[in-house]
Length: 119
Image (cartoon, rainbow, N blue to C red):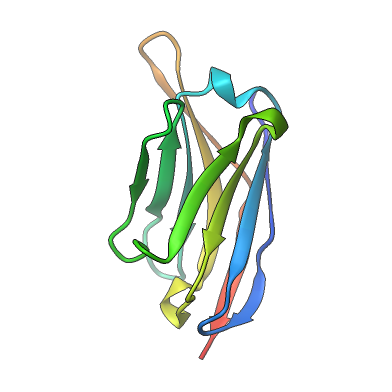
């Protein structure tokens, strides 16, 4: 069972920055992809950014140019650097890990960390 632990959320003013971290309980080389999702009140959970084992990244249109996902393989940690934050970025942010074993996709989730951007 892969365990994910997020940290780094908090309250920030619009235009500010935050960096989220996701510590993984096992080698992230064993996982096919890592990502960050968010869920705002009354809305569905949405993909913010993801990175594959090979390093390919995907971003939601709403965060392109402002957010950067990265991974530190030695520390088994994935980061989400968020810049130029907007009030609409306010949400609970969840770390996600994907394993494909052998053809079945398994998703693992962290407990979430709150990000609040004030105007």
